[in-house]
Length: 224
Image (cartoon, rainbow, N blue to C red; front, side):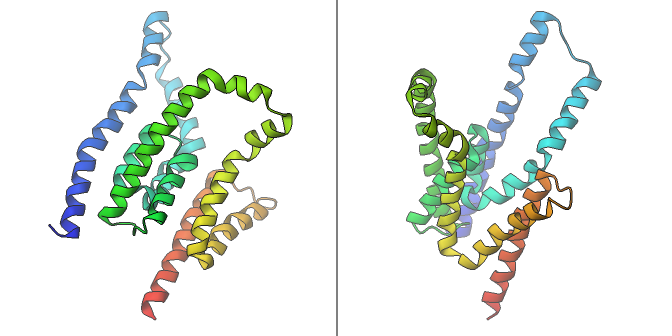
């Protein structure tokens, strides 16, 4: 079995297991709501459901397209299924998968990369589950005794530090691309003072703008 055949077999297995599992999770997520509606006889009208759905689409609709495309290179197919099932994608799954690919020198799109990212994500899920369980019992007690400065720092800068570390890791590999990866959202932020740009539009411009620049660099390098 060559590389392409192995990849096709891997993807087929991923879809066979991942698709129904994610769909099952989406369906079972409605069980608490259905239970409450049955118990208290408080069924919402169809118009109210559609109104709530439209508000959700307006607020998060862009992420339906942006996140799967932008994260796929690091997560791979199986990692994508696992990550969208477990959550904490940007601040946990992507950094773990990216670091695992980096230390193993795995090239995205290969079977090795798929296996490595899957193992890293599975490890992060188990670790996250243990840490979350502990935090539920002792997290509040620990945070309550921390100095105010540390509390503010954790609340305000923890996610930014994670994304910054991930960006720095990739910047070392592609410094020219990093300029655009950081420059495009900064320009959008400056333009926001003069043009009413929504947050979802800034995300779309930043992600696909950087992908477009990366594609241009790729063609120029291979043309040379």
